[in-house]
Length: 288
Figure 1 (cartoon, rainbow, N blue to C red):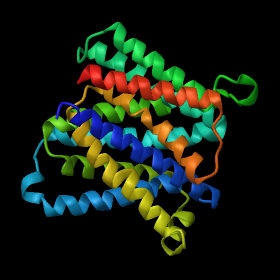
Figure 2 (figure 1 turned 90 degrees about the horizontal axis):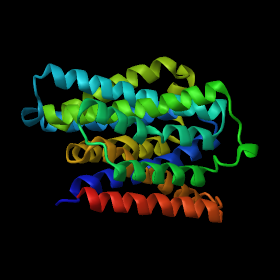
Figure 3 (figure 1 turned 180 degrees about the horizontal axis):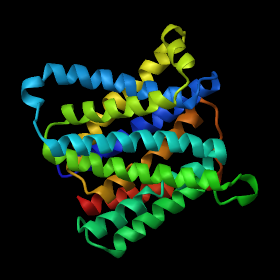
């Protein structure tokens, strides 16, 4: 059981990686990224609402702290999805992915500042290993082949900050009560925010589209299942560890593209993937 928390976070990251592949399929069909993100959260919200009703007597907690931390987590999830897509639009996937996955550094600095974790060279070494692996995997080291703009960098960093916010939000909410009310509040907040920025016409057209099955699958894997596992996992895992272990996500997304979408991976990308997996494995064993 000592690996249970880390195992749940890793499985969550695998689900998120698969979600990235499904989203890529939908974007190739012409669907707007914000609309895709909205339905990912909306299907998850429906799942959490049903779960909440089934376990209402056991799950309801009258805690102001739970409400506020859950709302903060929902804002973080919405910001992460939105800023990430804006960064891709303004720069490129490698730049956006690399900047978003600076989240472990942000989480670790915040954890040190708040006294949640001790400052150790081992943790800094793990962060350096993960970030180097991300750079190699995404190809962000090749400055001649990527497009960088101030807006792309700013929104990419915003995605990383939002990532850190929802990690701390769910971590704090997990101490205050059961996952059902927290996830319900967080994803209600998420859906309200993304609905404001979504294309209303395209959002409505999803319901009668032949791609509705992809959207449902996206929501079940990307929110309904994954965030339930994440909530239980983050309860047993330090924030910095959870943020680093979740870096399995880009590895899963790359493998999804390789096996199902016909993408190609070079030697450098495979080295980056191996570096991430080795670092996460060493960290998991050490923390456990």
